[in-house]
Image 1 (cartoon, rainbow, N blue to C red):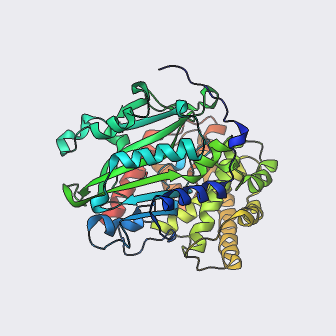
Image 2 (tube, rainbow, N blue to C red; image 1 turned 135 degrees about the vertical axis):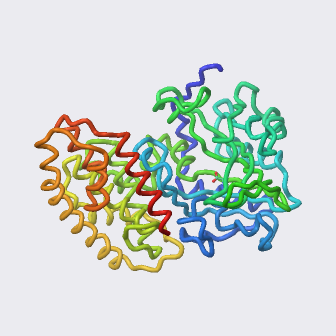
Image 3 (cartoon, rainbow, N blue to C red; image 1 turned 90 degrees about the horizontal axis):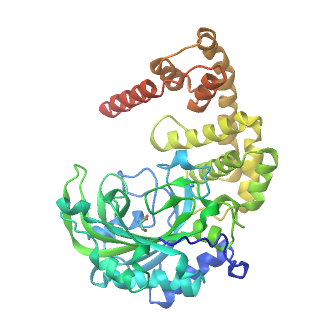
Length: 439
Ligand code: SER
């Protein structure tokens, strides 16, 4: 493939985050799509999901035929929470909360070629991005045993718009999307990537795509054709639909030439407050990301705890505070940074808590964390004196005393003790299995 290095997008393409969102909705509404509301991040009647993780998640009943959509073409911008990529947060483009700009075609409207053409039209004519820097991925033949053939139709639609070398065939792990949660609709998808240039590379993703450089900006269509049951059984859906989702913050990042999704116009003022104290870019991104997502969860009614959604909230707050402590910042700054983030935040749909109520929740977690830090020193002292440890011993300290894994890791590193990765992971899996067996 020819080396494409835009390095930057012309500054006259700059759009604010709010302008990107408005342009997306306006585009689809002009195409005859009806606006659907952002319903917040707590799923209603869906035990398979902790949080709304995609624009389509609240619409699952429309795909399965359990409910009828208000019209057969919908568009929306949905708040989403995804914690599967937690360890990637800190790079330029991963976040645990984001806005997905979506478009849907239900039932007879299923039209792959049109979904692809619309994505291309908005990216190039609307946002003004140069088509020479676009790549598209399509599903290869590795899902054929599940009855899902390689996606020739999507590839042919792209071939009318992009040269063949920029159409990338990827396996089901990349291009068979869904279900969101443990069961539900699923199908082959085709994703659009923008090439930011070699200066943005953060490592390899696969042969054709490199992390940080080729940014997935739009899942131009999940072509929902199958239903996956809890036991993994795949059956055809009665009615086929198209689910498209574009990342608001990622598109804003590209159009603004911002170094990361945390440094777009929407978040820069809050990011700058955190970054002023925190000289490490990765840490500043983790802190802004985790506090922002924790704020959304707390406003939506989640209380920190030890299981499921509450555990996610506690983990985010503790990881944010651990990151602060590791970079020499007092964890008490949590609330100050949270205020800076709240100043920038849009209204969170489904909010059930006031600003002060969330402050009280965060302050309690901050104080509990301070006690954990004091305890950690005492509990880790024998390990430091001994100069060695086991995965079981460390996992027990994490599980029973709440000592964050990053603190355990940091203590081992700074005392030249090998962190027992394998036995720690084994102890963690054993615990996960035991807890699911007792549910
Ligand atoms: N559901 C798909 C995704 O989340 C497309 O909207 O990528």
